[in-house]
Image (cartoon, rainbow, N blue to C red):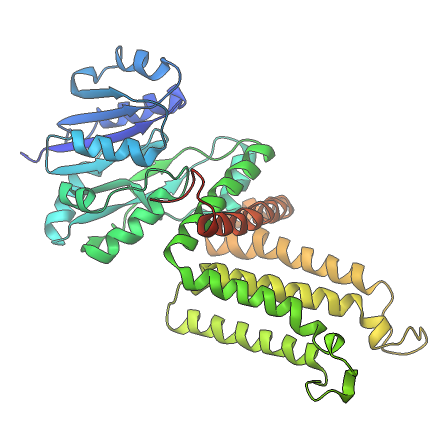
Length: 396
């Protein structure tokens, strides 16, 4: 087989054991790469020293750069490549023996410009297995690492260079808008990089969501304006009648305005959900949709909190009075979240039922809730920064 493929691997203070496994897998390919381009932005010399002694040294084109995010390192690696076909890996992704051979054949057979990676996520500890169950599960997912493409793809669609996370997903979405693509029906890549502690998990998902929000807000200006409008109306409308002189004698007085506004939010949420469901819209991942869900939760929580005062009038002997209603509501919300994250989602992602039951699903559910709590402020903060800040995180 005469196909020449350049492999690009960005590195930055990565674990040598993982890096070694990736290089060993490349040395065992059914179709050997013609060159392995390593762009190293590490602060230490660990990667460089390892490269100088590894078994595939003759294939490696090594470049050391100043500390940088992976997007910049990948762009540099693509520019350095000497061949038209380029494949991407990172230090935590291990390709199967047939990866390059099969992807080159798929590129030709499907007549596409890029074959994306199809990655299965692995674990090496009990905690990491729970994280996998709460996130990706046992099914493969489309990824940029493991992708094979013509050089023109990455020359036209460059990686964003100022993003610590989410740069790969952003690139993949933009590539799909301009080039024909294909996703293999077989997983060729295994990933080994789940956090091993609660602290590292929270940090990772906060940072990831921050940059996801950053990208989203820069790409969709209307989305953030919609979110701002929702927040402003939520602050003003419930207090509208209180701001009027003469209260219900004023011509601008609107009876039950808070209830009507709350109902309108419910209707808007249901309409947005139906549109996303039937028209395969990506609106569910937008800041506007997340803001709408957050406001609905706040209004529901406030309604529950005020139930005994507004509905039952604190009459404890009536059927409408519910003791400890706020505590019950919080318990129900947390319980539903744990069930969704600990049972429903893992089953959907084909996790082993024997692993989930009888009690492991509780641990998985709690980890999933922690992940969601870490992601929410990160996404919102990133969205705000992405639109209004001119700091170093702005996307050029």
